[in-house]
Amino acid sequence: MNAAILDALTLRMGYNATLVTLGAGALGLATGAVGSFLFLRRRSLVPDAMAHATLPGVGIAFLIMVALGGDGRFLPGLLLGAGVSSLLGLWVLQGLVRGTRLPEDAAIGIVLSTFYGAGIVLLTFIQGLGAGRQAGLEGFLLGSTAGMLQADVYLIGAGGLLVLAALFVMRRLLVMVAFDPGFALGIGLRPALIDAVLMGLVLAVVLLGIRVVGAILVVALLITPAVAARMWTDRAGLMALIAAAIGGAAGFGGAAISAAVPGVPTGALIVALAFGAFLVSAVIAPRRGLLGRVWAR
Amino acid sequence: MTDTALSFNDIVVRYGATTAVDGATASLPMGAMTAIVGPNGAGKSTLLKASLGIVPMAAGTAQFFGQPLDAARARVAYMPQRASVDWDFPIRVIDVVLMGMQRTLGLLRPIGRANRAFAFECLERVGLTEFATRQIGALSGGQQQRVFLARALAQKAELYLLDEPFAGVDAKTEAAIVTVLRDLRDAGAAVVAVHHDLATVPQWFDRVLLLNRHVIASGPVAQAFTPALLQQTYGGALPPVLAA
Image 1: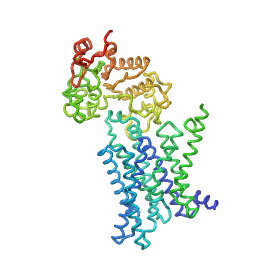
Image 2 (image 1 turned 120 degrees about the vertical axis):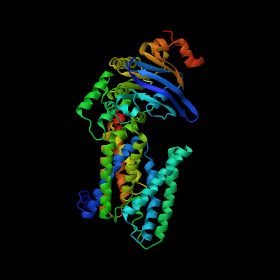
Image 3 (image 1 turned 180 degrees about the horizontal axis):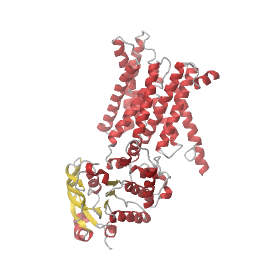
Image 4 (image 1 turned 180 degrees about the vertical axis):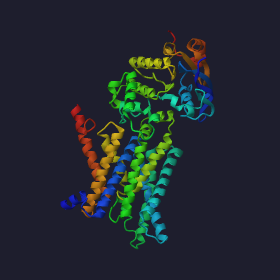
């Protein structure tokens, strides 16, 4: 089994597994980087609501595509449904915060649980339909690379790289708005617009991530690399780079190992690896880490 | 009469049912340091923020060098109040100063050696070069305030709008800020600062704008900073100052 894992990590597992592993790595790069800016803006929990809110959309898109006589598992179609549903969740979330003055954490709780519940009802219903064509939909819950098509992997990889490019262009504005929105306004920037772009990028990585990591766990791939990276540096840009590296390594490693070891859920493994990176960082990082703090005393 | 740096034309700002600024009109010249003074809730910060488009005006206009804000953005620097920043934010002092150059840098251009050198120069003017690579939270309150002044300097403006630059800072910082602002004025720029300490107005500023939702008086300190006008601005709540 060790030999199989080694083969997978060194991309000697055959074309398909290699492709999936690289795709998951690209996804991790993108989520790590986006998650850093989200963390700096103090909105790390919003993608949790957005990810759970994708599930009803996945179910509805599946039903529509089957009703139209197509393959219900066509990933771009499922992601379109997921995106619409997730945006609806975000819209409800912001409506709750603005309209009722509920604090954001409570509103997140409401949106997350309601949409998730609706999603589970739909997916259970779909499973009851039989026909076998629903196979793979449960991958949207906890993530699975099994049964992914090459086109799916290309979509995820290319999307991840596009997100990284957009972040590169926006990097200074995102840092400025997170650090000092009052100054950003004062020099004529529009923080609301910059926030909207950030949420758009978050939506993009959530959608790219739900197939691989799952709706429940994708938030971990946004937060964990960012908080791990925060331990190592006092520079926002460097933090995003380190988080991208951690996320990328976790995605790559998790996908490779789960390809080599049958029955290991991809999403959970990726998240566990990212958490491992956080744990190590929290203990050994100089200055901010546990040992560093003890040493400083 | 010198050129006008900033003019408020009948500005009205409302927060819901409250009228924070109620028809403020004044004109502030280049080459002078102006203090905006008035009691709590007089709309001092609000007036600055409204003229910069940070809060919406219900009526009125602000003109910068005789032009609307959009045409004059590059000539206006702004230093917000210090309070609302997360001091644990992963950013170094030099990076905060570089933010002042965002308009020059645009989206894509990487920060070059010349940019860095200029940011360093701005830090030098506030006496903080040795802190350039520290995380912002590692500095004292007064030092942080000087970093934000350096960021305003990095904007290379002709009009500097400062919201409570002296709030809660130590004597050394006070002196450093005054020196920098005087240099700016002597170079011909206009400095406009929301200020709460009446005692230091005559000593530091050339002009004063007395505000209590509308403008009570605006002019050179000798003419506008009089007990009678202050009484009118503060009502019965005139703070026990002006012994100097």
